Amino acid sequence: MKRKATLSFVILLFSLIAFAATPPANFSGMWKLNRAKSEASPANNPKKSAMKIKQQAGRIEIWYYITDGLGDHDWGSSYTLDGKVNHNSWDGVEVKTSQGWDGSTLVFNVRRGSNSEYKERWSLSPDGKTLTIVRHTIFSHSDLTEKFVFDKQ
Image (cartoon, rainbow, N blue to C red; front, top):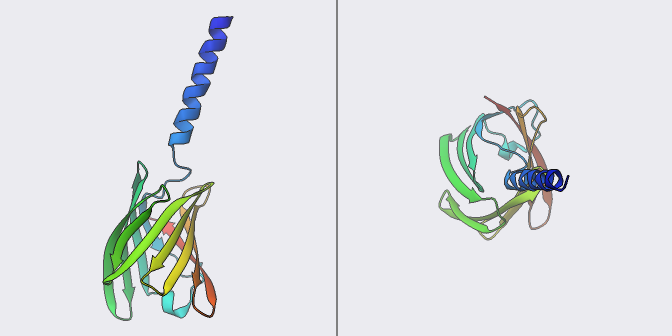
């Protein structure tokens, strides 16, 4: 009897360790912006937008593909998911970000240059086919909340 209890405890312990090591959501895949379901300001509403995401072992890499009035743009960034500050560059401007989990939601805190700051909350639909990003941008005299909905390709 004592042996069964010990075995059950060991199995439970390994199950908890495996669960704790698994991120609450995995955003890996190719995602295309669904403009009809998104609620973006005219300045943040490109003709086309897509992201290729690779997430593994506490890191996430994102390649952005945008088509707007100025043409096609693409760039990539890499982040850790442990809350530490990451440094990337967009259009020659330094971008500092920290990312971490709030339950199954991935939260990005972003500071671009000295005058742009925003927070993004990334969540997946239960079936894993829809990525919703809610962005709250803080300006010097106002703020703005936008929603971007991406469909998995």
